[in-house]
Length: 150
Image 1 (cartoon, rainbow, N blue to C red):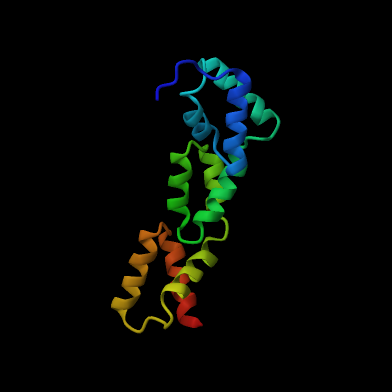
Image 2: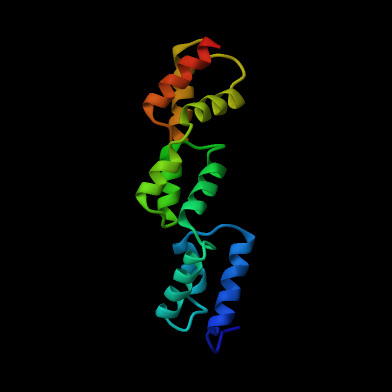
């Protein structure tokens, strides 16, 4: 069913607020979802500016929420890449992705492996696992050392 007419400004705002009520969205993500319903790019930009001005739309809040959710499984590099893919500024992505990385790596290792690594090959396997999850070499080294000392 093709849309014959674009949404009025009020309808577009209601649609945007419905999306935001379900979960946080980045500005770029919300714009992508609303563009088929907007009458013009200027109307969409004005709506997004209004929502951001009223603090109903916040890239910073979205980044913190998304980073917290992704942090259960991934390291800073993967979180940064995901946030950038969703249109978040580099400075915000950098700040929220690196918080508590050592603790996250250690917790992920503890959940995946119950026993400490006994061989060099097992240490390498665990390092590759953490590397695939987006952790830096320094973080992997510290996490493996802490896991062995426990």
